[in-house]
Amino acid sequence: MNENLIDNNAPLLCVKDLHKSFGSTQVLKGVSFDLHKGEVLSIIGPSGGGKSTLLRCLNFLETPESGTISVGGETLFDASAKMSRKESDLRIKRLHFGLVFQSFNLFPHFNALQNVALAPQLLHGGNKAEKREAKKKNAAVLAKKRRELRIRFFARWLHENPFKLWNELGGELNELKHRLNAEQSPEAAKLLERVGLADKMYNYPCQLSGGQQQRVAIARALALKPDILCFDEPTSALDPELTGEVLKVIRDLKQEQTTMIIVTHEMEFARNVSDRVIFVSGGVIEEQGTPEEVFGSPKSEKTKAFLSKMEEKI
Amino acid sequence: MSFGEVLIELSRGFGYTVGLFAVTLVAAIPLGIIVALCSMSKFRPVKWVTKVFIWVVRGTPLLLQMIVVSFIPSTVMMISNKDLANFFGVGAEGLNFIFVAVAFIINYAAYFAEIFRGGIEGIPRGQREAAQVLGMKRGQAFFLIILPQVCKRILAPISNEVITLVKDTSLARILSIAELFMIAQRIVTTEAIIWPLFAAGVYYLLFNGLLTVLFHAAEKKLSYYKV
Ligand SMILES: Nc1ncnc2c1ncn2[C@@H]1O[C@H](COP(=O)(O)OP(=O)(O)O)[C@@H](O)[C@H]1O
Ligand SMILES: [Mg+2]
Image (cartoon, rainbow over all chains, first blue to last red; front, side, top):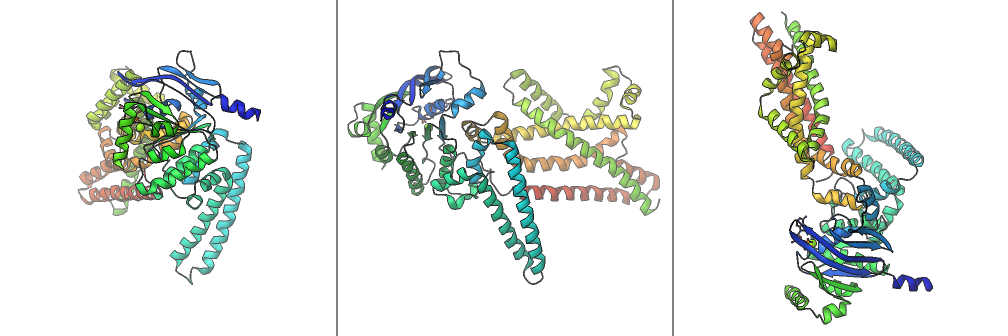
């Protein structure tokens, strides 16, 4: 009980007075907000307002000129203090955040399971000797299977269409390979199940629809168990009929108390799923509050104009 | 000379051809990667020196470069070719082969570098950023995410260069390397028969045919995904 109270009072994420410019264009002109654990924050606003830049700053893909970012009381970034900007330090700090891109950015040469499993494997690595042992065991299993398939092939190739037979047996071998891979990364397999892609684990990104790709990307981001998961217009690159499946996954994540920051143009969705909404325009937070406050009775003229424009579009 | 003798002579020349081809390929590809990375360096002087190097090497004939390389030790560095040959422990012909190989490696490294640069810059920025936000190190991102995709992208242009390289080896005769084409020419003049020239053509054709098959196989092997 007590712990909950403390959790609820101290915000998980504190962003203070973030400034960022590219050359002479100021993109963020002092952005500050807090986010509590388990909360969902939606960021809405016109194109070019600085929403993506804000998320990229949180993920240390851009370096702000001033301001601070802290997570769970630890200051990750403070422009005024002499902090290490070394890549290796940034790398660790980044892990507090996950980022789902508008254009998915899956690794095309890896299948869905490998996309999800790769980063945790690289990060935790596991015991090298153990891994070598597992590899050896798998190789032995595969070698045995190959031998068995070869015997079966030569027993039947004169009686059946040998090409068809070869393909059939090859398929069996692939299945076994896949099963061994899934056994090696059970957590990745579980995450893909969670986003409804248990039957697509071995498909490559080019074999998946946009909605499926984005769900793999969400599973990939979840695999590192970030404190805060950020989405940059996760459905903007999707055909309208595919947005639903991605939004459903995000809704499910909210059910599981995932702390999220979602940049979106889906107003209906933002209204339903968020605990708080921020309206960003021209590099500043024009308005923030509960969905009821921002959508129901906006105070800023800019917010009103933006919301009515968005409604016209529908 | 009998038919068989001519073929044996030609095969001996073909050995030099393949040797020069292999040496150039093995050295020019890694050198090309290094040159490509330098030409994309954020450190301006390195970048510009590399760009000028590529400009000069691609902008002048390989023939000229071979001759320049063969003259540099004796004229600029004041080392006689004899001392140099002794240093490497080779004869005059061996030294010429080294000159030719060096010129070929430099020339092809410059061409490969431009192909690599195009391939690396063609990978969407999002790939590296995705690797970054997943906590990968620079090396991990380059070798596990970027490089495999680059390999697939550059396969076709590289195969072009490699096939050109096979034919370019015939330039080596300028420094009296007894490669396939030179042998064929020599037989044609001494024996007053024309067919060895065509036979040499068949050697090139078969070699390039084999390379084409190999590149197709590689392309097929990488066709399981799209970049
Ligand atoms: N790397 C960059 N270099 C220069 N300008 C940039 C860069 N990234 C973004 N901008 C500019 O910053 C502004 C805000 O962009 P962005 O954060 O993408 O807005 P939003 O996501 O709200 O549409 C835009 O005017 C854009 O042109
Ligand atoms: Mg944006």
